[in-house]
Length: 263
Ligand code: PEP
Ligand code: MN
Image (cartoon, rainbow, N blue to C red):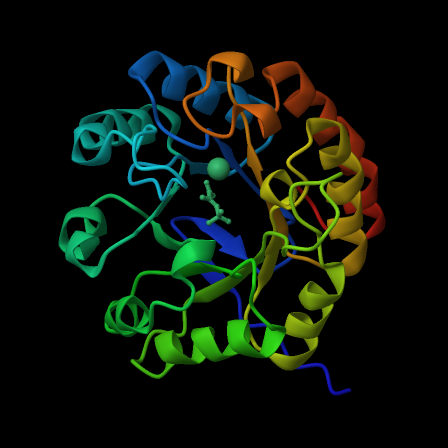
């Protein structure tokens, strides 16, 4: 099959889809200044170049923590300044575009919203990069179709992110479909990331799946990190501790070099 040339996308000052294997890291949800700042400082020190942190959360149950929402904005502004890192956060509703536009460097479209074509069309009218996660039930063709809704509005700054699909085996949270990343590389001009945190739901599998992400030719990974995973308000079971994140970076380093890329 013909390999389509990847068109790099800039998230802030970081080029996704070039010679750098990009590590996006941070907590599932922004919970407090200390939690976000300490995590940001640690992941930056270890070589992550883009910060993540959920402000608007799409939770399975309505009574669970839904994110700090707009209250997280001052923390984000401050911590972006302190770290100098670009920031990615999930948008769950087109009405959040104006608010988020000022301080996110890329909009993340979550798995649950991949089919929200009205949201995708609105994001297509912006110039801001969109990190489009695969729905956990989506055919690769539907995922690529979703990217076309954004691109057809004029915004081709799209980064695809495989985050695992549902299947019968509960041994992992989802099934990490590495072949989808290879297909996206072959068939679309968009860079592709892998999210082994949501794909496996298991810190003990994240290093191996991250090495696999390098090997399959992905342009980077997205990893959830928390100072105290047991205390996390969302996805604590899959969050890496600071120590585990440091170890992950050490483990992927030789694979990234072998792939002719840098961290
Ligand atoms: C997340 O990145 O925290 C998230 C909710 O991911 P997904 O949409 O892939 O479940
Ligand atoms: Mn999460």
